[in-house]
Image 1 (spheres, rainbow, N blue to C red):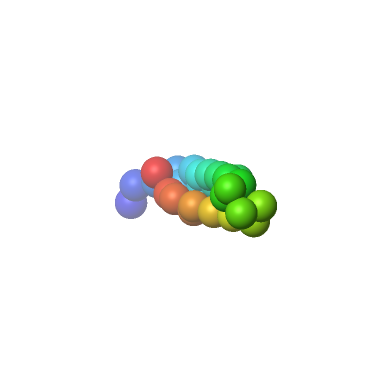
Image 2 (image 1 turned 30 degrees about the vertical axis):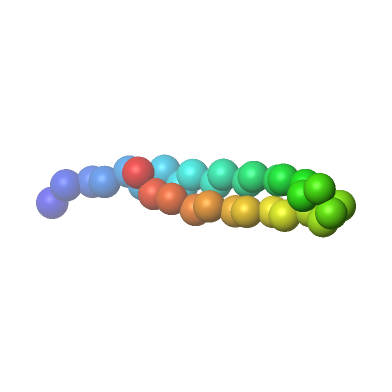
Length: 31
């Protein structure tokens, strides 16, 4: 039995388009 340490990664990207709209992208990942 081996213990695996899972580290959650949360990447939040916020971009604004020329039209004035905001775009939020959230990426979840496990190492």
